[in-house]
Length: 131
Image (cartoon, rainbow, N blue to C red; front, top):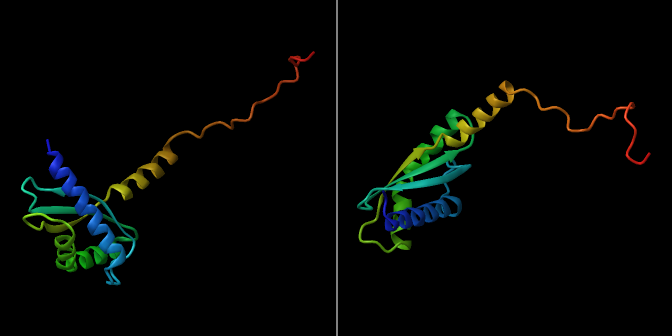
């Protein structure tokens, strides 16, 4: 079980890194990136930043390489905004969760039967309640 302190630190790292990617990173390879969550080690010296990158496999690999290239810059931003004894070392991991959930949704739409039309069918044989 992770401590509350580690959870709070992970959330702070997520906020700082996602804001820095959005506003301060000018690498053209890094586009359409969402920081989904951060895993911190127990000693808070390492942070795995899980990112979702929209696009095909080529765009995802380029974006991940761009993020790994900018890891030092992002660590310096993290050091200036978070007061900790050690600045966490940032590793980026591609999060396939969003892509997999979209694929599962598509498969379920194909496999599951179509829902009937919700409009009621009126029978002419039955008298109406007003009669």
